[in-house]
Length: 612
Ligand code: M6R
Image (cartoon, rainbow, N blue to C red; front, side, top):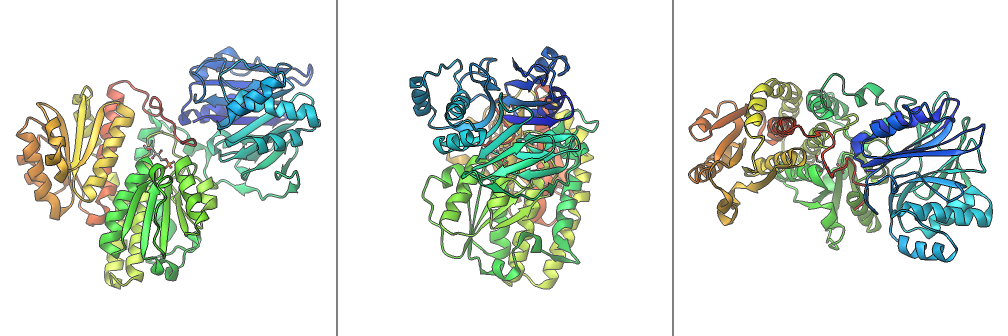
């Protein structure tokens, strides 16, 4: 989704803005632009380009042709109006008295536009952002102070926004404001920065402030001041980001996705290490004590996309191991269906970015109803992390590729840890079983590595199926949860239509789709369901399907049925999702590469879906 970078300091702004925007490319965008103020002339230059950032870089000689030490930049992902140079940000008033970049959506833009047209403003783009900049200008002309212009505009705007703003009359200053769209402020040795996401400024600083909803920041090269909506100055603590700049680089891999797939053993190791200490699970960092965990009688897991699939896997583990009923919901459904949440329930929101609009809305709905909420989140300081009652960080490090891999894997570990601890507290397992489960979990990083070591076979197989039209994934129980994620990986980066079906459902409709040569991937890691899924595979094979079987070492009889077999190491069956997902991630990746697609930035998708 859109990205924002701003800089005011001693260095030339344009190269910093372009470098920062490049770090946000992974969020998805269709046009980009920068605005930089020249201190000598006082003029603000705005340069925009449709398409890739490299076009903007070429237009500005990598930023060298745009002089000035104060500026804002933006990558746009079209919501209102087509992708075009005219609709790209920054937007400004006719006299360039106010220049602004915006992430988010202004819901009452038509009403505001009508008012501004009556006041004599003309509009040149189809964007809601142009309404924002002109509204700020309207109040600026009325009040004469940037702070009042911003706060009065914020009170009029309905929707979500992160703004970076320059006022022509206030050289050497940047302003930032937000509501429901992420924005951070950084301080470096040479100046102050704004960014919609950490990687944009990691090269410059690891010291940031988080702006909360309805707050404003005023930045100069030497300092930053924060204000609330009543224009009262507020104090904030600076936070150190632990991620290093290299972790947001490709590090020799062709794509971020491949790098992140290979980082899974370490991410899983870090995740386990963060919460398992001296042979016991320790949630003190989360703020959740074991007594509180024991009291929850029902769990609701709410999330979107892959995080929802983690919830599906979590349900099977929680219910079987801890005997706690679990409901799993898509956040976009949950928030609008007036959900009934039983007393003594815990709602778990799972989100890599911590900014997904529907997940955040579900969290806020639960908080309004005073239901305890846990956020399982990767991005430190994100909205879901900050607004949850309990925050369980996933320690995957920055994930850049739109298709999630390592964050998904660490979210799974979070589910196992919670389920195991709940099982212990509810006395569903004894100390020996507890120790056995933890010991087996510790082996997962090396088993994931072993699975990765087998990647050439997957690469070879993927190249055969690069031109497939449809692919089906089938499985039962946890294998169904794996199938859902495998299918999403395939469709989002290879653009091949794929579906996941609970294998037992085939006869209730989907089997009529099976025809000669269609690829069906059967996932069979659960011993008690192996025979059942195998017989479903036989059924589709007899209707012409080509079969890939994914199971654990030792189940070699699958080769009697499957045309191509993939094996993962044996582990505790609750944990097989962590291993079986790896070949499916690789398969999606290699099909996408074989088709020559933009693996890390698939069409129409954004890394962080901050609008619904
Ligand atoms: O940041 P979140 O975990 O809340 O994002 C949820 C989904 O948008 C995300 O998992 C999406 O489905 C991924 N592209 C899947 O790879």
